Length: 486
Image 1 (cartoon, rainbow, N blue to C red):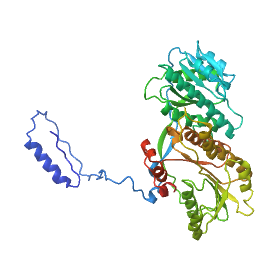
Image 2 (image 1 turned 90 degrees about the vertical axis):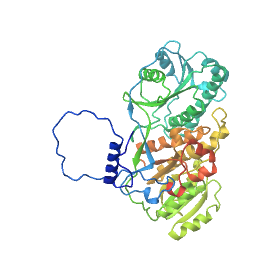
Image 3 (image 1 turned 180 degrees about the vertical axis):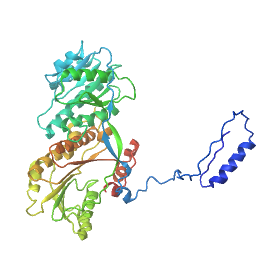
Image 4 (image 1 turned 60 degrees about the vertical axis):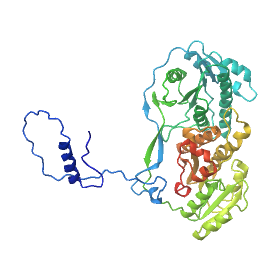
């Protein structure tokens, strides 16, 4: 029988003596005790601290909870970290297919007998699909290692790597359907995931991390993992790391790892305190450029910028017109002028005309905010160019164009709106998760050059959850729009 000593919302002394008397009523067995000396208890008063849990509604969030002046933790705010983990022991002998550039031959030789290579051209549009499927038979593992492009901010490389890996996924899915066991796929990237600020970042390879995280959900039957290394890593070490990753057989294994200076690091989301800073007041007499102004997030962003004192907000959307006339009237009493512009953010010439206006008929540009989104859902095996292009133009091409133009028109704020799906993956939106992973690395790459860049990986906004009810099935709690934007 268990008898409590304390109870909530009762007098501690009375409760303790009541329960103590109950133990005598229960007649506990007598246990012989050896005699001992009495110990004097100090008369210092005890420190009383209450530890009761008070129930609170999880859906009611006060505005001041988001900007706690003491910098306390908030359940919504997390940051990606890369703790060190042990390098696994490599497995036994196995055969590998290495799909890479000319360096693939040396890597295949180091991976052991029975390993072979295939050029990246086999994954090009119009490549030999039947030949690719046949060469997959008889190997245990497949390595896809794309080339490293010279330019860090070229959107074309992101398209190329996404298409190559998607075509490989289609072939592997067909192989898995025809055979009882398909080879496991490992994707090798170079500097796709910077461990700390200041590290080199390759946004085009980061696209493959977003795709890979979704691939792990859509096709776990042949998923192996993501391995990111420095672009200078020699093939001798890469072969050792690949064998180590392939040797992990636990079902709860880490299937994403980066190797830096001989250390294996894995991703973790950790709670972080919000910065203890007051609400920023934007400099008067400047402009703020919002891309995707008529989308799900755009109007909320415009209201927030107006509340922060923005003098002029230039709202860019593909259709333009007067779609935001009501919003313009709403922010005008606070001294904010909302200028609507029709332009394609993914077209450099179109956006160059917008940038040319700053400092002329528009105030000098102070901040750029990319919040555009386009496209729908499609599984990787069903995805077409028509599915990928709208998504990448809105997020990948637009970021590259804004970066290039902002080099000629320097800004103090360069903000990219991304999504937590780029870190977690999400079925049927590999193009979306890939574009978000691109944005994360893109911000790192800009900061490595000494340029301003902030990326925010949003959770599930309530307006988006209302429009897409199936999004709740992923387990994310919708965030009220007006609270999240702050």
